[in-house]
Image (cartoon, rainbow, N blue to C red; front, top):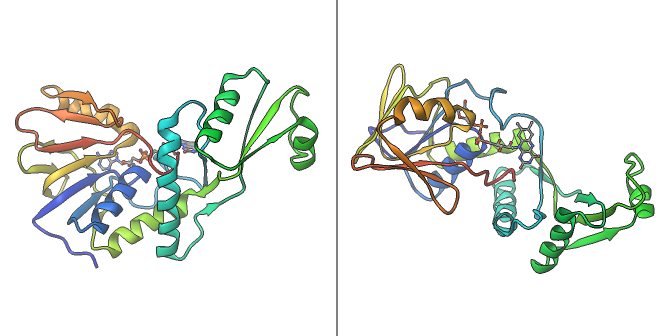
Length: 248
Ligand SMILES: Cc1cc2nc3c(=O)[nH]c(=O)nc-3n(C[C@H](O)[C@H](O)[C@H](O)COP(=O)(O)OP(=O)(O)OC[C@H]3O[C@@H](n4cnc5c(N)ncnc54)[C@H](O)[C@@H]3O)c2cc1C
């Protein structure tokens, strides 16, 4: 049940997949959370719109992603149960290339190392299973059996609906105009000033224009888990999420 308040534990700005999933987890774990979006929802002007996104465990040599995907798949299945909708279609994902292709080779090694179920296909088998696709005869194929398609728009809506169900406050059509860091962070929109103990900026491509507009006097540091942390004495807890947790 939505309940606005004077002071939020966390204000999340940007209701793309990053912001919506972050806000959902915050509200679910008992934080009084505001999710602020500049456009009326749903909208098609961000990176998260559209019906489908690929998801998989095969990431070549990038073990960081493969490790993260185990948790990501679990959380997707939890969300499906909560909202009673199928959000993931497990059709498998195919990685292919010439036998010496570094990405294909490292993908196979990584899937073996992480004990992910996969199949190696030769050209004849590839053509039999996927007759609509034609590749050179010497290509190798690795089918990550755990991968598939996320129903992106449904997933985004599910995160937002569940967020509100867990008591989160969603304000769309309300752009953040300014951010005043401090022990209490203030987020100014046209009509309101929202106050929070922490703020998460999940602005997608708009970060490139918004952050310089407020950031002249602040410095940024990339953390190990790919977040950029805004540093400074009066900044309170300001986090800028850069990595995709759920579509990747
Ligand atoms: C065509 C395409 C295909 C892709 N395919 C895949 C794929 O198959 N698999 C995969 O894993 N990934 C894929 N990606 C990448 C993935 O979709 C993105 O990484 C992800 O959607 C990024 O989400 P986001 O929340 O960071 O950004 P966005 O979705 O852009 O969200 C940012 C939100 O912040 C809001 N905002 C910005 N500034 C303000 C402000 N001042 N006040 C209030 N709100 C604000 C915006 O309006 C927007 O809603 C694809 C991306 C694209 C574009």
